[in-house]
Amino acid sequence: MAEAKTEPLLTPVADDDGAPFWDYAARGELRVQACAQDACGELRFPPRPCCPHCGSFDTTWRRMSGKGRIWSYVIPHPPLLPAYAALSPYNAILVELTDAPRIRLVGNLVTKAGAPPNSVPPERLRIGARVQVVFAERGGLVLPQWVLERS
Image (cartoon, rainbow, N blue to C red; front, top):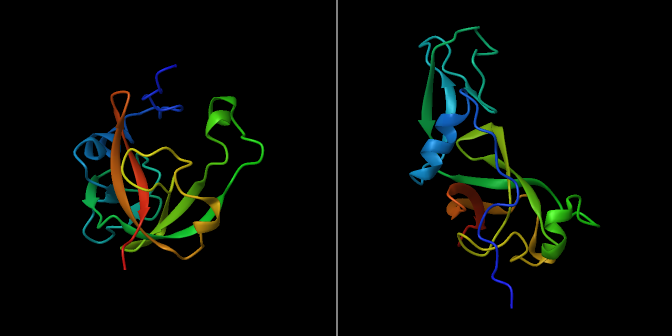
């Protein structure tokens, strides 16, 4: 029997602006880039070199609570990427962060950290469902995933 793959099927390309996001994820922290100007302080994602609100190049990274809600989701039929065919049906969710409602992150809803993207049955996905970030190491990279928040 073939051994299950542990590396991520898709790996992000960390550029200079986004590298801190992945460094913090490796520490189990969800952080979002913010303008470091006192008069602005706007959060932004995806990371970029300059604040789209005030034009400043000064940045900082703010720690988020990791709580959010499913803003949207999709279950690809058939899988959009051949490497994911064995995991079908799987979900891809868009999460609106509770402490930064204009920031939305893409990920998978899973049953626990490290579970595959098909571990939650499609009928359990609901727009508005409360979620919490978890982190899982896959092939040397730590990825944010999402689990349903316990009520």
